[in-house]
Length: 160
Image (cartoon, rainbow, N blue to C red; front, top):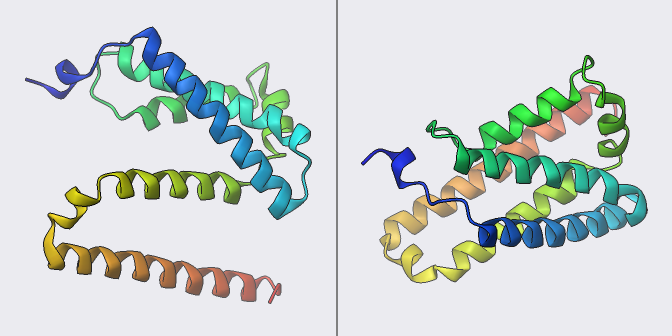
């Protein structure tokens, strides 16, 4: 059976769950945006809602369109189309989404991922000590390389 045939059907329950999750995600990201970047929640909330609507539309398209593509492809296509300078809503989209910093969004995504992994810790343990060691090395290496790249770029810009 092809992957597209294995896709679960789009139900109203799916959509409601996604809306609730995206709303909670948006609020947490807006609070993080305020704490980290001093942007008031009410200023960042419209941008997060725009991003959430694009995400919701992408998730729906992923379930409806029978092409075997990840949901992130649909979400990205929607984002690019509405932000193109030729789009009639481009200025509005850019105006509001510019109030949202990337770091709080990434923090919420990583926290959610951590909860998802923690929820299935028994599956994680089934990988054995070698799998856990590789995972720890990958995470550590990714962090260290990101820190080195950030340091180099910030140094080149004269920020540090």
